[in-house]
Amino acid sequence: WEDCEFDAIVCTDPHSYNTFENEYPEVDFAEFADDPMMPFEYEDQWNADGEIDVLHWTQAVEELVQEGKLELSGDELDYTVTYHDPCHLGRYNDEYEAPRDLIEATGCDLQEMPRNRANSFCCGGGGGGLWMDFEEEPKPSEERLREALEDTAAGAAVEKFVVACPMCMTMYEDGRKTGDFEDEIEIVDVAELIVEAIGAQEEAKLEVAAD
Image 1 (tube, rainbow, N blue to C red):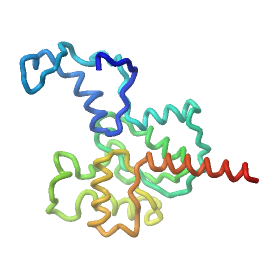
Image 2: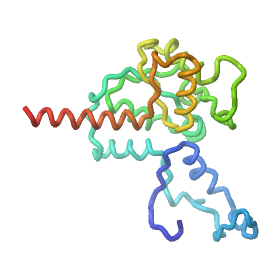
Image 3: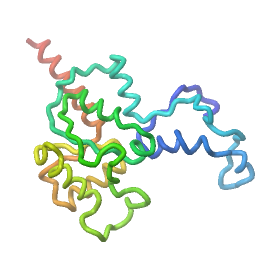
Image 4: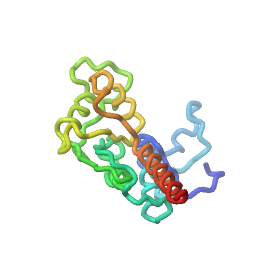
């Protein structure tokens, strides 16, 4: 990386975002100079002064929306949705607004989960949970989907359960199947809403041009 020129790192996963933002700057690479398992040719702390911006992709795209570089009218989509705050984006890094701003920028009706932001409940994938079988019932992911459909203000009208983390996507897709929610709710990433909104906008422009 020392040979590359860049101003920012954009991460697609909240876990990698947390690592680059908080964990790497704490590592004294000189301590590992003689470690054959970590042959770093680097003697300083990386980004200790924050000279390189580290962003989750929702932060980067939200900046584009704010700057008018990604134009969304706010009425492209009309889904009723709820959003799950990922642990490493929310509680670990206090980023709650960028994903919500993007969801609302697409025109979706965002209904908050009863446990949200700093009080959000983990999807169950942390601490190796992604590879473990849960003996207790319901699974954390199943309980969260139940909350979305029963405890939000919109209740069963919630169509999409929106995530901003690949691990959360995996856990909730699993919970959707094991909890028998497949016919009731869809799991989507914020990025999928953005792409669909852009597609709807382009289609609308083509229809106007055709008229």
